[in-house]
Length: 119
Length: 110
Image (cartoon, each protein chain N blue to C red):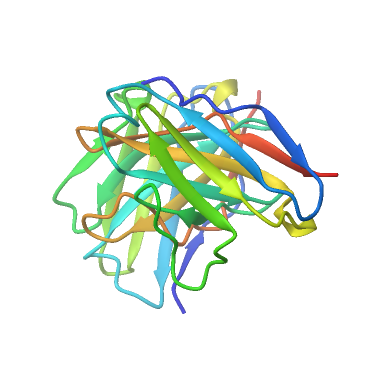
C-alpha cells in the first residue's frame, strides 16, 4: 500500500530552522512529484511548493522563497522540507503529498508534522 | 498568489444536496481545467475527491460532482450524509508550476 510517513512533532525557537522528512512507503519516490502544504491552527491549507523527487526541479510559493528548501535523499526514499528563520506565524501542521508526473492533484497525503514556534 | 474564495460554511439536512463554490481569477481557475477538491475531517490529512474539475478517483462515491464556469468552480454533494461533515478545500493550478488552495468551507449536516 502507498503511504507517506512524516517525521514527528517539532518545537523550535524563533529564528531557528526546522527540517521535516517525508518517507515513501510502497513506492519509489523518484518518478513522482511531492507537494508541501501547511495548515496553521484553525486555518486553511497553504501551498508551499513542489519538488520533482528526482531532484531535477523545484518550485516554491513566492511567500516562502528565500527561506524554504526542498530536497530528496534517494537512498532512503525520503524527501525533506527545511524552513528557516522561523517566526510564530510558522506554527502549523506541515503536510507532504504525492503527485504523479503531469498530475495536478495529490494522493496520498502524509499524516502531517506539527511544528510549534515559541520562545 | 491570493487564496481562492470559498464560503466559510454550508449546511444541509441528510439526503439534501449542497454546493460549495470556489472563486478565483482568469490566472488560475479560469485559465486551466486543473481544479481539484479535498475533504478533511478534524485532525486528519486531506483526501482528494475531485480532480481536473470533474473527474473522480477510482472507488469514490458518485455523490460528489465537480463543475466549473468561468472563474468559479463548484463541488456538489448529493444525498448528504453525516459522514460528509468536514472541511472542504478547492485547489487550482496557477501557472509556472504553482498552485493555490481555497479558503476552505465547513460543511455541517443538520
